[in-house]
Image (cartoon, rainbow, N blue to C red; front, side, top):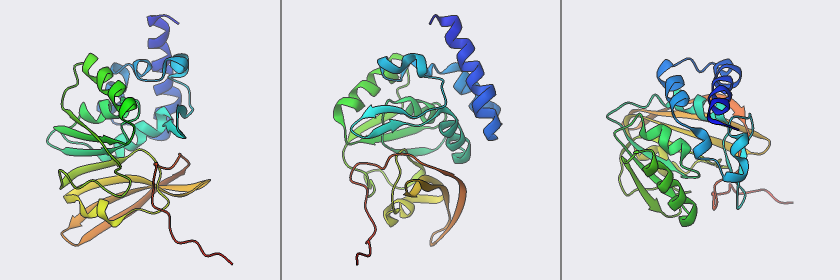
Amino acid sequence: MNVLNFEEARHNMIVQQIQPWNVRDDKILDLIQRLPREDFVPAAYKEHAFTDVNIPLGNGQEMMSPKLEAYILQALQVQEQDKVLEVGTGTGYFTALLASQARHVFSVDIDADMQKRAEEKLNAHQITNVTYEEGDAASGWNAHKPYDVIAITGSLPILPETFQRNLSVGGRLIAVIGDAPAMELILITRVKENEWSHQVLLETDIPALINAAEPERFVL
């Protein structure tokens, strides 16, 4: 597939997948048009970079579908002054989308090798306002709190309270909560020091973060 075909495929992805999901923010659509998603997917899946699928990354993890990435980005309303926590660097594509809108992104991943490859890709695109940290952030990441935005790129059966407490007042957090196959994409906003709003945006299904906390299960 040559460069022209990639450009056509990217345009079709936006028109046929992303816009029908009510992603109408021109800044986000322009960013997705400019940022070459094909550079971030695993090499074996490069020709599937614009298809409406989750791309496997190994170790049970997946890259979210393009429409879900775009929808989440629009819901977070990232501003140029925002400090962002991303839990799960993955391929680095969503990291790049966040960093292109924010002041700074702290991206945490438990897989050091995958994160290093992602860092190399972002550096190749001159996206340098990202700090990469290796670690297990499935229960929270306190190092640079408070955050204006928290994006969790894998699902969680339950959301540890630490995450919403690490938001600044006015900060937004987005996470996929629940068990397969019926999970909910939830937007949490810290309205006041001790008040948060919770909005269910849609139902979806993505793999859980490694070491995600499990609720107590009732067993007969």
